[in-house]
Length: 340
Image (cartoon, rainbow, N blue to C red; front, top):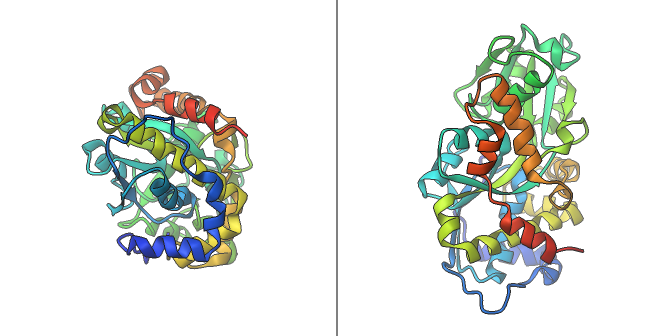
C-alpha cells in the first residue's frame, strides 16, 4: 500500500481528474436509476478509508454517489487495522474490507452487516525455496500484517482446509506496522508471506520468492469473495434508500474496474493511491471484478466460517454468521435492476 495517499484532498479535484481521465463519458450509463418517489434519508456517506488497489471501487464510486444524490461523501483515514471497529461503532458508515477479517467481528457480536461481495483474487501466498505447497508450511514461519487481519484469517482457513491446525502447525510473526510483514519475508525472517493487492506485484518486480497460491486462479479460493462491502447495521436499518443507492454506486464502480482497468490504474496513480502505474495496471487486470454478478456471497461466508469454526477461531456456526452478519436484499434487487 502507498501511504502517501491524501484521503482529505479537495473533492472537486477528484471529479476534475475523473473528467480529465475520460471517466466522465464512461459515467453516462451509470447515472441515477432510483424508483420514483424514493427520497434519501441522508445525503452523507462516510467510508473507512485505506489506500489499496483492490478497493478501487470505493474511490471511484464518489462521482456515481453524487449522481445518486449524495452531497457529502467522506473518506475517513482511520488506519489499516481498525476499519471494521469504526464501522461497528458508527464512526464510519461503510467500508470495503477483507471478508475473512469481517467474520470474527460478526462472531464477536459487533453490529456489522455485509451487503455484497466486491471481488475475488487479491491475495497471493509467496514463499521461499523451502516451501512448494501449503502443506509445506508445517513448522515454518509465516509473516502476517497483524493477528486477526485478512491475511491471517484467510490463510488460517486455507490451512484448515488441507487438514492443518493454524494455531499449532505454523509460527506466525507480525511487525509493528502493516508494511513490515513483506519486509520480514524479504529479510529472510519468514518462510512465507500472504500478500494482497500490490504487494505480490512488488515482490515479482524484485524477483523475490515464488507463488504457492494465487486466489484469482486457484480453486476453491478463486470461487469466493476476498472482499465485501460492510456497513453499520443501524445505518442500514435507518437508511434503506441511501444504503441501496450506495451499493448501486459501488456495483457500477466495480463494473468500471472490470471494463476499464487502464483507466482505473491511471486514476489510482493520479490520486496517489498507487503511484506506480504499471503495478496498478497489473493488479486491476488480475483482480476478478466480474464476480458480483455471478456468485452468491453467502457461499463465501458459509465456506470460510465453516473452516474457522472447525479450528476454533470462531464460536458461531456458519448459519449464525450468515443470519447475524449479512443482508442481501439490496444486492438481489440491484442484480435485477442492473442486469445486462
